[in-house]
Image 1 (cartoon, rainbow, N blue to C red):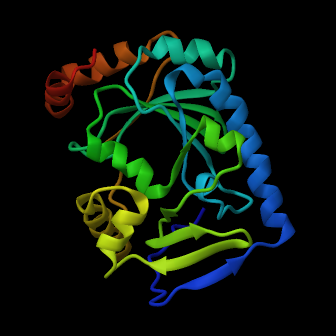
Image 2: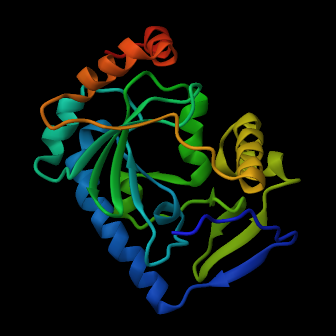
Length: 234
């Protein structure tokens, strides 16, 4: 999939969804619901375009568990759905996460260390809803990778520029202004110089737990080891 560039809308505009787009949305919501019901005891969140509603045919279905729990409990709940397991850390300063890939478009992500409020704000920034919200077909505002605020409407959504409206966007999303400023900086920089890669993106072998794999990484990487000591983990 080509990388989405930051765009400038300057004024708001309304997007009206054709029937095909609504069909994509509810099909992806149904897939998310089936997974989230299995994970209900962990208060899962659906985030991104499927939470906002501005989906495309190739949009991912992303589920996030906002609390740290033993990984085996998550894997038990998902039973035989897991196709691939990974540990991901965007930069040495970001959250260490376990990722379970269900299929090509569907993932379940969970923290392997205690998440901070700002790290949880990241998911609200993109738009996040809980299991009840999925069941009741709720849609929530959030910001896409083009730095456009998506505000759902009955007919589709309203798009608004984020840059220059950081405080307003923070209030709309219920997040800190700091996370808005941080994401604006990261995405505009990425647009200018390109993605610089992910610090850790390692597959977890079938015979190893997420916690064992994280310990192996921490043993050889001082940045990871420090993070685990600071916020708990293996």
